[in-house]
Image 1 (cartoon, rainbow, N blue to C red):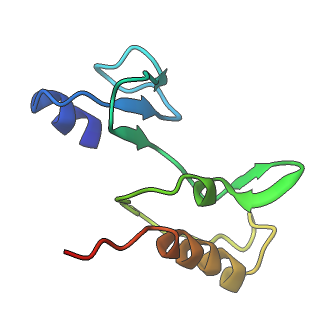
Image 2: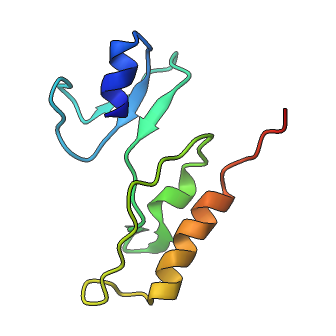
Amino acid sequence: MIMHVMRSLGKEFDYLVGAQLRGFDKLVDITKHNKIIIIEGDEYVSSKIDSKSKFLYYKPNIALISGIVWNEFNSKISQEEYIKQFEDFIDSIPLKEH
């Protein structure tokens, strides 16, 4: 939705998403000149050798968390550890004082 809004406003941006979106012909479009990148990220581990959540590497200025759902049957970590990942992610967003 954010990508469609940005496009309708005529704003240039880069993006990285995990599924094909209507109106966008690629999953990844990264340039050297855009100042905005929209990343669809999640809390899953970075790789088999790095158990840190992917989204802890992003260092965003703005973040939208659209849902948090821990599934005990599908998770290798406790619910507390799962929630902690989101707390760490939120703490990674720099606060700007005006």
